[in-house]
Length: 342
Length: 225
Image (cartoon, rainbow over all chains, first blue to last red; front, side, top):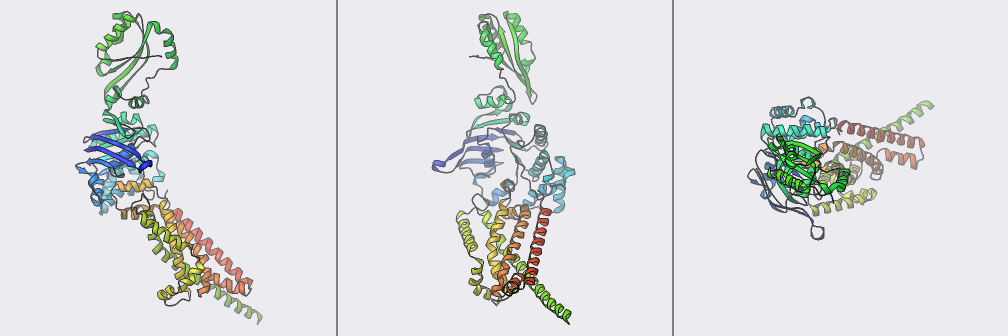
């Protein structure tokens, strides 16, 4: 549905040159919810603005639904844009229009003159975002979550195939964020719209995205299914994002204690995915290798019904025994890491 | 006998003040309308051709800006005399209330253009960006976003313009335009008739107060933000 090829965006010239996007390649399939995560300044906002040409790319191609947007101009671009919905961090609603008139706005833009048709479509959308009772309210009278619902209804008015979400929940509290993400997931399921979600919050990616790309300094440093990123991150940036919601860092006190007793113990972190989460691995290990295990930290999580988790354990016993235990765990297909306390 | 003389005196003066009030209102009303007919599009062009905006054109924008600045720096009293031939061409005479409307309008156009520019610049860029993302044309953005979103601010700008023009209209006496300000000068100032001066000042104060009040009321009525 969306193909991005060698996309580059450079601001300014000569000394003031800033490379915002440095060769982005992405392929987003129809119906997918694709997350792009990065810190502020990483280039994610520029990237999403290049998708509908709010920013003109310096180089590269953006192909949406078969149209190469970089080659279109004027009227052609406008007609393609009408099939791409967009929602924003600060909602960007028209203050002078009521909720219903805000939702009617893109229909007017697209040239719809039939008042009855507009009204019918607006009512349908109000129902979809559960705001039928606010049809005649002005944006200033709404809460943040309600404003974003209006934004979503407005973005869907012209039946777009793609919905671009630019930090759509970053101005909302966690509870409202949850309800907006739920709404987006439902819309994706119901209408099959492809969604691109830009965010700096890992929780957003985890909650609704199928795939994710991590962007840093204008480059995609890692991308793939969200589950893979959580269970097997390759880059430091990805790990740092994951640790914002699943902290596996040990408290300093425990590390200090380990330093003292490291002569006869090892600190290990076991990551498990899916079915192995259900087996009595630890007790088996204790019996087999005559060691003691002190469980320090554990967590278990799931992404779209796939279970994964980590367990941090202190193994106490002779070096040869603990080494054998590690080999045993690895033999079971678990990812085992020895934590260095230096 | 004496009382009827006083009554007559007062009536003559009262009539004069009434006529002058009418002249002021006519001059101000017409020049506000005409200055907006020309100033509003100029203000829109100033904003939309500015860097990064929907019809960006740097050279054109700078030239237009320079012309507007030049026009604004010309003192009104000089403009009043300089454009006499133009006035005569336009209304057939260089003297009278209608004739005074021409320099008032000409001097107000660049002022209005800047007022409109300031109002339109208050519209958050995000809203314009949202309209662009929907595939809006420049004209749709101007008519459906920029103007409706800044309506409240535009009304306050028009209020300031109107009050400024009331002040300027006092100088219209130089070209026989009449009006309250002129009356105050001729009778109150030159002939030292303090009562007329006072009456004129009171009328001007009331006029300004009423316009300011109406403007603010209307602006807050359309402001949904």
